[in-house]
Image (cartoon, rainbow, N blue to C red):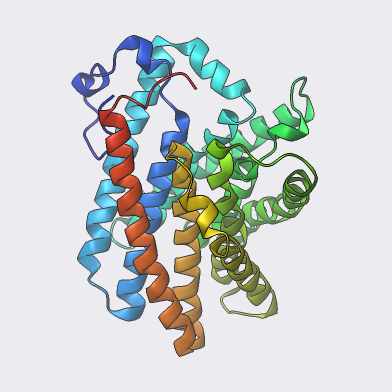
Length: 333
């Protein structure tokens, strides 16, 4: 497979993947868009709050946009050539939960472009939000009317379909009536708490996650961190509830950081991109805390997290390119 790096989604590019490998094109690759778009938003936020070079965020924003179009073309080709493989993704207990990464990528790109291309960003946000609602309804219907799920299938990636709704209000407050944003925020918040209890039960009382899924533990950070940003956008201030969300995300970040050696020893999987967006959300939330509170501690923490996030995304990009060069992507699991 061609490396999942920014590229135009031309027919020649699509045909570069042999048909037999195209059937195994992983929908989880859309998490790379989430990570790079999150990093772009973090750098743009840093330029507004702390005077970082805006050009870095702009370059990353273009990279995330091109990457999204490239991956969308790949998955569309998979749908056209191997519809049964896409149907299998829709029924798989793990892969199903990465399908909404497509719509989340659109929502994040709308956030990244909101200031400089508001008309385009509004349309991308609207399409992404509508698509994500559809993914949510499909995923929850699958969970309710299932015949094949078991507690061992549960992992933090299950947050993606439902809790991704919590991202919608971050720019949705600019584009639609407030009740639309509250609708999505309510879905994300309430079902985050329900799913959190289920995921923790699985982690505490059943076998450990397989190595391939262990990086998804970082997804635990994303709901309260993104929820903080969405709630502040809706409420317009940092009140007691906003602080509960932020400090919950901070605790989870510290908890996972204290287990860093466990993650460092893992081999590289595409699921390692699960490290990126949650840390990006936490970085952006910390810049928001720094801007609104004026406390120097949050500013220092935000810059530290931005440096770590930038290094992490660089390492993940290199590892992904190396895996693609060795034909370790687009292969059977």
